[in-house]
Image (cartoon, rainbow, N blue to C red; front, side):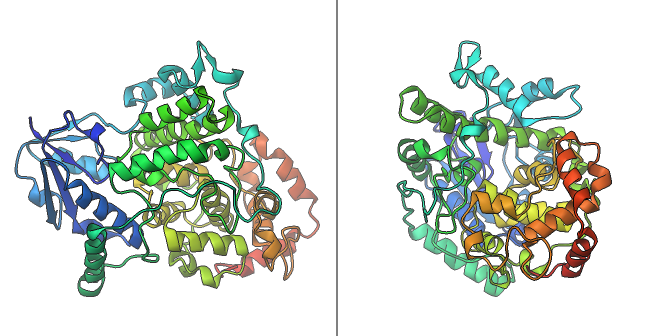
Length: 485
């Protein structure tokens, strides 16, 4: 049996044909020279590789580049980036197998997507549910409805500082983590390799055993509370009831199919309500698979699309995670979460970080690259469609039916941030103007022509035309420029 070359996001048993198959792992230092990754992301990847090297017949090679160490016939599962796929194709003696680590095959996605002008998650998700028999009762969706989002979009409990759910199992660092931390210090001091964000205790799994413990704990203790507050934000509770499994799944430590199976079993056994289970499965069977396939289905230049002509580069305070420079409480807290943990959940990503970037016209490719580098679960395939298409609406609606733009009223409704903020979400002009409220109307004014044909934007655009202070508001936001709010 030929040795299986595993990339650092292919570390689970489902990437092998046999448990005893010999494995090659490569640590490429050049990867960390090319981009400024979050320090905790670098730690997570290297620790995962080195922990995996302790299991079975594994050859771990530390080198500058991948190519210089490939010296035997190998098989490798389809990589998760175009650059890695191109490398594999250029290397003699390496056989590339179909992708693993996703639920729907490329062939099934292409058959579903063919001929569609616009690709929508909801349509794909229903197709995938039928195709794989997930949360189905015969030919009908469990509970009689495909989409239970209306049950899963509650604001946080009034007066709560955090949700009443057990904390996820703590991670215990070991000698490998200490070795990685010391090595990253040397890279910074001796090799000039730079990182973003803060170093810190490891927060996410790097072994199959740690990942399974997180999965089982989530299903038993946190999934029952996940649904209602999956879109809510609390300043004192960054985890809420989220699973925190995305880093482990994206390292390949968990097979998404097994995660879905565990969640559905919780519903079938009466241990978790359908609405929360459906919302969680939607994120994995639906959204995760959807953005993976879009990365390959859309043309390579998709990452550079810019239908809204957003040209502004990321300001220094944002690029460098300088949360202390920001007075807007929601943005400061979320940016600090990225700085200190390399992770915030999907609503801060979309409606605080992405929303602000889109309102200010930051270049979509730069925003996607920032998310890729600064999040511990960020990869090129994850962030391309997520950021360029959905968050920044830079593809003009190929994968999302409207821009995810919102003013301060949304943040006020879905969080506890506004109560302690110097800005007022109801005010759009003047010293107390909320940057999100002002930014929302400025964004609509700037793109009224491009959005005029979108029926989902008709009501907001009618509101825009009724504003009596629009010119002053637009000038106010132009003067703000790239200053930290």
